[in-house]
Length: 501
Ligand code: FEO
Ligand code: CA
Ligand code: CA
Ligand code: CA
Image (cartoon, rainbow, N blue to C red; front, side, top):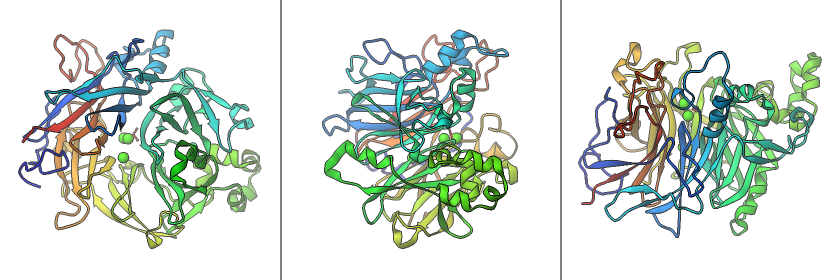
């Protein structure tokens, strides 16, 4: 992996060294274009790109790797959207908070000079935010715990996500509680996996069968018998790893109708002691000792809808193992092993986190038994700390971004790592498990949402929350992307590409 030998981003590169600069740094012979940043107008209606850019998914238009729709998650707001917040948000701040979270669909293209740009004339570009109406599906639809609701107002706290086998996007509601409370919205309407179709603005669902928790991501694959399997992390200290297995089987010719598979199936939670996937069902909850002994628990869990709604509690009752902040999960396209970023957990000294690799029995994603290894551990020896989003390239390398919190960066035991970064870790061969740094993030930010175009000539990447430690708007800690005359930092999405040979 040394020396520039191809214009694929996933090809050869000269690794960079850690940096403290307020810059996005990429290797020699690579460049980046800011495709969209907070506040940019994305369509003729004048809708604006939101804040806290996280997950990205690129959908080619006419099989192109140089024009397509980019779906971006917007996870949260900072002082640059809201201004200083007092004891409670003002009406204007509440509006900004709901408007700027959610998702953006933008149309992006690479022009003749090789520069990636946003097309503000796009007929597809639109915002999905805290005001957009979603249809609820699955066992919690219409139940008393959700106030009998069959629809929900909006989506927010959209962290990472995943693409489906039928070309839609799954977006994950992670830390939803604060926004729901501030806007007096029913909190059981959030913490779900939402599905959107970038090409169809009427298609907006929340799939309750996938459980309600601090959803980080989805990673979809197929069991050996054709059922759909979705792996999911719950980004919270001492939280569990889940997988959903559909009841029915995937039918490639049915296209988007396969989405119904996400409405009925079984949710499982990983028990790392027994190496078994435990069903998170009403029957299993009822078998637990706590259920037998406590009348409030019996009252809470009266239906499968209640089980998926109070999923974190149900998962522990059925034997799920609490782990160290499971964030992104990726299924290896080479051998069906499953990689989980366990970011960190200062509750019990896992300061730098690790990447866990699950080996499903018979390499079948539908298996109910597994084994695992710690594939790579964060720390000085590996050169990275606090792994978060993961992505595979076609060479079998795992691309890993880091999430050292802004309050911990560049000090104490995090000093040597400097700003957050993007790392490339081979999953086989002599360099297996060794991290090479590909990018360094601006001040007080993290890099999120790595996603390749199909030909791997371009990598989309978000720069999330630059300058988030700013407490006084006259002294921002970052001014990335350093637009001329701009006085605030702007989160956004970049396209990284190699120069032509
Ligand atoms: Fe939103 Fe788990 O990072
Ligand atoms: Ca994340
Ligand atoms: Ca991922
Ligand atoms: Ca994170």
